Every structure is written in structure tokens, then in C-alpha cells.
Image 1 (cartoon, rainbow, N blue to C red):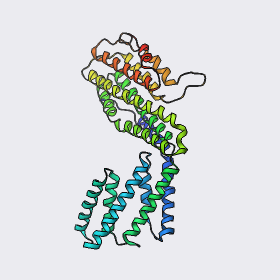
Image 2 (cartoon, helix red, strand yellow):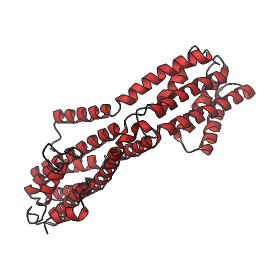
Image 3 (cartoon, rainbow, N blue to C red):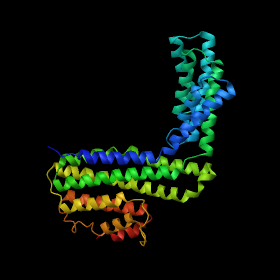
Image 4 (cartoon, one colour):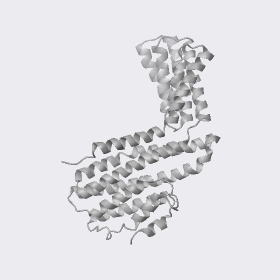
Length: 362
């Protein structure tokens, strides 16, 4: 029966990942709460709306917990609300309210919004607002009142997004730590599979590795969002160099992850067909996991290079097929992929490609 990751270890890993996500989102969460309260108050004071619910909804939907394209989300929401309220008001005035009118307005609103722009938020909000106008009893001010509520929320969200942008480096670092921690977990579990000659465990590790693309893309999107924030907000231009460094690191880890997946596929296939993989490969995988887990950390006091670079260089000089006792084709392929991963990660941290290759045994 295949061994699985111990439940206590799985819980610790999940808790660590959750904490890292929270660290990258707490400022956005506070902004949503603040913006919702401000939008509610403004809509009541300015437009005499007793329950301006959609003013709060507009803020939360526009800002969210992601840094990605916040200003675009605000623009999409405003356009979607405008289109939806306009169509809903016209349809309700001309042909009344009912189930077939709702069907008609959803199709019309989504079709027009889709024609105007490719944004999903715009299309969805146009349909929702048009539906609200038809389905719900008219509120104070009719469709115009709902539009005022929404535009109040949009204005508040726009002000927060432009004037109080979250520190983009916080989210980028958090996503980077979460992904590299996940990648290190995979490498450690792969080392266990090699040491225990457990084909089922190796196959499970491969499946988990294939499922990491979403997190990797989220990290890349966070980097792009950080660059946008630096362009738009003078308050956040001081950490531009760190965002550039994170962009280089993310690109290198992306390349390395692709090579890791190829390596894990070869490990899984070799163990499935009962090929012998030397135990030294397990040690190399564990050394790689340790280096990956320390990616992005600064150099220790008194040291000239970060711990990850030092660990990768120490590992690189051992990655020779003869050194590791790789005699079969599968073992040789695994070593070759390990070499590629190490070079990718060294380059991601500023080490010249030729220098990285010189470290590898011939």
C-alpha cells in the first residue's frame, strides 16, 4: 500500500501556505472594509439613499484581495453598471417586468457588454444590474438611484486604488515564498520516493507538480501588477528594483519548474518499471529542496552570497553521472534535469550562465 504524506506534515504545510496568503492580502482586506463603510456613508449623505447596498458591493468587487489590474476592474465595473442600469430601466419602462423580460435583458446586456469590451467583470455586471432593475422592486430614485450608489462605490474604489495602493512587493514576496515552499515540498517527497523505491508516491508527486501551474501564474501576475502600481503611484516607486529582481526570480523558477516536472516524470516511470535509481539521487533532491526553500532570502551576516546561491553552487559540483552513480538511462536523465534546474535557479539569482555551467562536472 503506497505511503502518503503524514497528516501532521500536510496540516503544517497547509497552515504555512495559508499564513503566507494572509500576509500578502491583509492590507487589501482592510481597504475593502474601509471602502465599503465610506461608500455606504457617502451614498446616504450625498443621495439620501437609505440602504445603498450596491455602493459597498462596488467597492469590494472592484478592489478585492488581488493587486492585479485593480484600476481596470474599477473601470469595468463602472461601465458594466452603466450599461446594465440603462438597459434595465429602458426595458422596464417599455415592456414591464417578468421572467421573459429578465431573459431578454440578460441576453441583451451581456451581448452589448461583450461587444464593447472583453472584460468578464463588465459583462457580468451589466447582466446583473439589468436583472436587478427588472426583478427587484424599484428603490428610491429608481434605476438612477441604483446607478448613483454604484458610481459612488466605484469612485471610492478608484480613490483607494490610486492613492492607497498596497505595497506590491509584499504580495510578490508572499507568492514567491508560497510557491518555492511548495516546490521544495515536492522535491523532498520525490527524494523519499526514490529512497523507498515507491512508484505510487512518485506518481502522486508528479501529479501535484503538474497542478502547480496556477500558483506559478499567480506569482507572475503579481509581478506584473507590482510594475503597474509603480508606474501609477509615486508612493510605491521606491521598491522598483525589488520588483525587477522578483521578475527575474519568477522567470527562472518558471523554467526550473518545467524541468522539475520532466525530472519527476522520469523518476515516476523508472520506479514504475522497477528500474534502480541510486540513493545518491535522493540526497541531491533533498539538497535542491533546501536551496529552493531559501530562494529570495538575503545573504547571512558576514556572507557575500545568499544561502540559496551557496547551496546551489555546492550541489552543482556534485551533479555528475559518475559522481552520483547514475548507470541507467533513467538515472542519467534525472541527473541531466537536475543540472538544468540548478543552472536555471542560479541564473534567476544573477549568476552568469557560463559561470553556472562551469560548476557542473564534465
